[in-house]
Length: 149
Length: 192
Image (cartoon, rainbow over all chains, first blue to last red; front, side):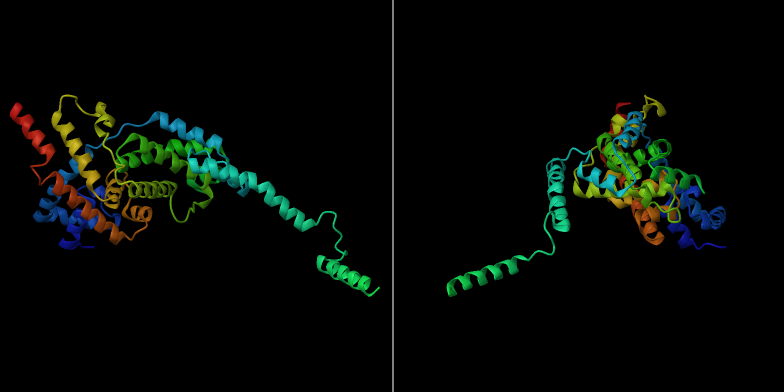
């Protein structure tokens, strides 16, 4: 597989001078072209300076952060949907909105559940009894009968 | 079953030991990526914590056929960093000189220190996506397909972004002798 000068230039401009960073499937062809072309070698040398600059950027590790990240999982449950709901309702973040809104939601949940359960089971109310509309109709008939008397 | 699959299956069941293993394996890469994107310790800690929190709470959304755990975590970190930088453009603050690992460098080489400061400044001036692509390519050893997956773009688009990033850095670092760093280097030479 051969590589065009234009494609080689694109590779160098995008991935830099180190063959280890070039696309795997084009690395061999690009390396062959580099060995043969003085123009390619000049381009690589130009980008090598930039790569040397970039190599200077080193960072210290943050050992305390690792332990903190490990510990944070102990406070937060995972797995089923109910646990996630509880995590959402009682967040571990310090955001003001979360601490005001979510406890309000928690307080409202029993009320919502109570209304739903009462509606579903109709505690103490016999389904065979007359509806409110029928009761009103019968009462009106009763009033009408009284007026006839 | 691969190591990644075993690890993620264990994390999905709430195995804290598996989570700890994953943190130890990927912490350095994620925190270094975040630092190079954000430029300060506080934001780096926040983004790193949030990334691993999502590993713990959303492990079931990882798909082995789509990405490795490393790629998946870097994608989360990338999205968090981009969101953060777009919300607060002034967020990037240079703490590089405090964070520099001086054990790696001779203390009596002002040229190196100036180069590092200039590089940090030049990286911060790049648009977020260009910076992210360059950091993932140069420092983290991801392949072009993996970086494209992390950034959710095509390989062609990635190459275009990377080329613009390197051209931008070259223009700032190598072709501007009047930059502050070069000026300070000139001053050092005069003083010497």
